[in-house]
Length: 453
Ligand code: GLN
Image 1: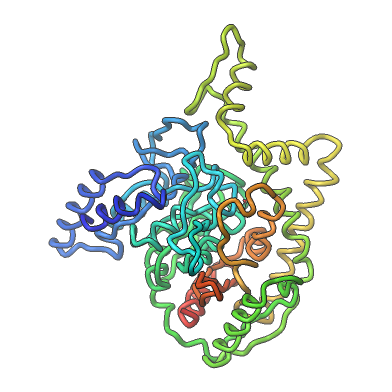
Image 2 (image 1 turned 90 degrees about the horizontal axis):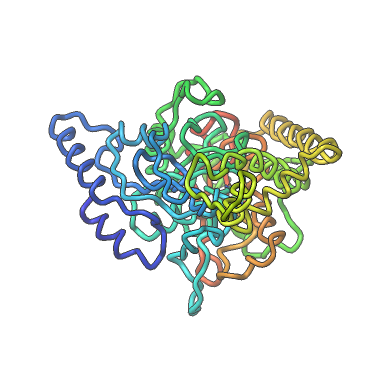
C-alpha cells in the first residue's frame, strides 16, 4: 500500500485520480494485515484499488466528475465498494471519468482530461485513455492501482480497456448492485472492473458481484468462482463471428487483429462459426435515444436543493435557482444529452423516437438470443480505432459516438462482455478484442479472455 501511495503521487501527471485517500488506504492496510495474521484473509485482502468517482464512498469525494455535485460527500457507501472493503481491499482514491460517464475519451470531466500512459511511437502528442472510465484504465495501466472499479453503460469499461491494453469486464446487467452508483441510464448501467490481467479481473469481479435487496434490478443468483473458470480449455467451444461487425472503412489493422483472434480460437480447439446479428446497424441510434432519455430523467434531481452546487441569482426565485445552478453545474456534453433525452420523451415525439427505440432494443436483444442458440461466445474487435490524440474528435459528437459501435449492442441486450488486450497497431498503440457471452455466463467470457491473453 505504501508503494502504491507513492505510485499514485508519481502518476499525478496522468490526472487519473481526482481525490487521493492515503490515510484511508493506510488504515485499511493495517486492518488487512491484522486479518492476514489472524489467518482470515480473503481474495482482495490488502489489495490497493482505485474507485471510479461515481461510486458513493461514505464521507469521500463522489461527484461523477461533475461540477454540479460540488463538494458532495455521501452519507452512505455503494454496495460495490462496501463489498470490496468487506473483502479486505484498500482504497487509494477516487478516479477521474467523463462527467456522469457521458463520453468516450475522458475529455468531458470537470476535472480535466486523463492522459493515456501510452502514446504512438515517436509522437509527442498526448492520447486519450478512452472513456468514460479513463481514470480507471490510466491508473491500472500506469501502475498506480492493482485494479479499479468502473461502470459500463454503452462501453465505458470495454473501450477504455482496449485503448490502454488492460482487461475490462462488464458482467450481466443485474450481477452487480447499482445501489450507490450515480445513475446515468439505469436500464444500462452496470459495474465492473479494470485490471492488468484476466486472473485479476476474475478475482476482483467476483468480489463485487452478488444479489442486493437495495437494488430491485439486482438478480438473486449465486456468484460462481470466477477464477476457477480460467481453465485455459476451450476445446469444442463455439465462437460466433458476427458478419455485421465488418464495418466499411474500418482500419485494416483492426480487421487483421480480429482475424488473428479467430486463428487463436481455432488453434485452441474452438469451432469458429459465422453468425448474423441483423439489427446491429440500429444499435448506435437506439442507444443514443434510450441512454439520453434515461439520463434526462435521472439528472432532473440536480436542482440546487439536494446536492452540491447551488447558484441563487440576486433577487431570483426558485426557477431562477434551478436555471442558474444547472447552467453552471453541467458541462456541454451533459446538457446535450439532457436536451436530446427531453426531446425524445416529449409528447408528440415519444412514439416516434423513444417507444420505437425500445422496440428496436428488443430486436437487438433477440438477435443475441438467437445467436447464443448456436454459439457459446461472440468475438469482435472492441472498438473501430485505437486511442486517438486529444481534441481529435471532441468537436464532433457524432464521430465520438461512432467509437461505441461495437460496445453498445451488448449493453442494450444486458449481456456480459469483456475487452482483452490482444496486440498493438503499427504505431505501437494497444488494441483489444471483445468477447460477449450468454446472460450470467461470465465464466465462459473469462475463460476465452484467458486464452487470448
Ligand atoms: N461512450 C458512451 C456514452 O458516451 C458510453 C458511456 C458509458 O458506457 N458510460 O454514452
